Image (cartoon, rainbow, N blue to C red; front, top):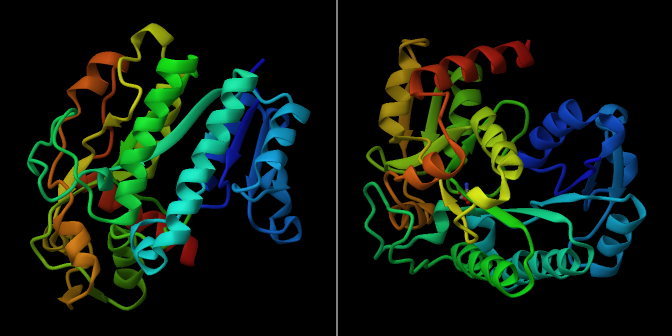
Length: 314
Ligand code: SER
């Protein structure tokens, strides 16, 4: 019997992943945990425990007490917030991972941990970035993701921990908001388009980045965790291509639905982060190992985001 724990269950990915796991495994078999007090969590969110990812004892206790068989450890600071507080980002992102790797070693749970396109850097070949390539990340978030990938692989090789990971592209969804990332513009733009008819973008018009609809990201996560163990050839993290576009291309696609929509651009420190990340990704390894296939091209992504956000706002 599978019992899942999502750490960081109130975050951008956590909210949607929790919902999908509840649907698949049943409400009783899924547990959410996050730093927020229990009293602030909606009643319909299911089982919940307040947890600090830095508190290894509490994490261990939760896993054992609830009979957890798989953990999704999503608690982290993202790229832009990380640059504002590098030491705390390093501490939370690394200790949060090492704590659960140690617990996985002892309890034999399956583990999912997210890596990111931020694990690449300015010296990486930025077009069709291969699975294995030069990785010299320059943000503290990226360094934590690169180091985290190596730690995951280490725990697999040394202790046989069944840990699996994805280098998520920028994630775009309508059920939860991103917080503190460089790719957040690609979510914010939809709310601004609907509510104000215009958007002021912190990345320049021609900044291409790999992005992905949250539905695809959640499906990828679950497909990866359910793939037969012998298929998993990568114990660092899998590349996923998603769909690559620039702010200008996204704005043009939005204009097809809202012809009066206008976009303007301003200079921001996040540009440097975006410039150091891939423009597009090669994900043939994920296709080969666990049959990965994307569902949402740009047109469908934009159409879905606009109609779902409109529904939510009204
Ligand atoms: N979406 C993340 C960020 O922008 C990258 O993983 O920080």
